[in-house]
Length: 103
Image 1 (cartoon, rainbow, N blue to C red):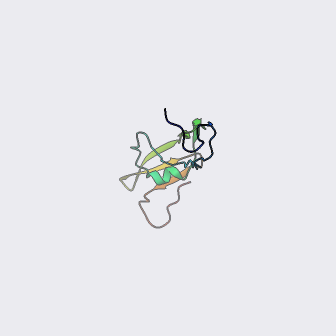
Image 2: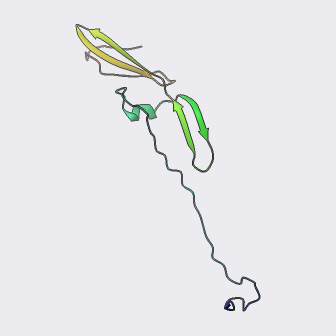
């Protein structure tokens, strides 16, 4: 046994270490089975139905975003557009540049 040099064996702590801990939330989006053709950035801008939310140390949220894919023909050519999110956002490559509007 060796006597503590700090408290001289009196079992009293005369010094301490000040420790500061910071928790930082890292946000990472993961899209499961992303084969719709939409960009991930498009999905970040809309909301969906929250299926699961965990407010513990590792905060996680699972959200179901509705996506509707519409195939159509215009002047004999096949085209596609998407309606997605609760906000009903539209993503489309318009076949003509004049006055196409999708409502």
